[in-house]
Length: 137
Image 1: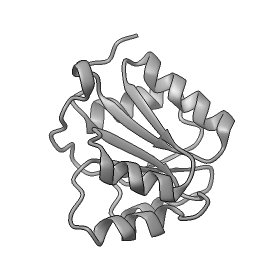
Image 2: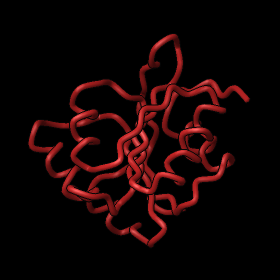
Image 3: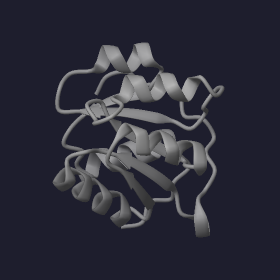
Image 4: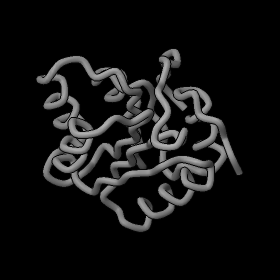
């Protein structure tokens, strides 16, 4: 694990569940991450392109955003730059990738970088570090 910043206060999602937006274009990986975070008690929303991720981030409140670096239409850097054009975004954003993008995560303002795959143990660690999630297994 690479870059990390301190945990900001996070708001709970619907019915007290932690709302997580998972931005990933590889469907099997997306399904695995969605299931992992759901099993930990999260309300999971997904996006398969950077453009859809940007729309969802602007439209709804999330407690945590996990974003793959390489996504179609807008990659993570383009998405974060477009998001910043509309003011400061305070929800913790975590950069994920099968490639080493630790430096990119720091430069783009992500709270941390985690290499894929995101295992259940890593997902739990992310939730505990960056949200006020109450983990249910």
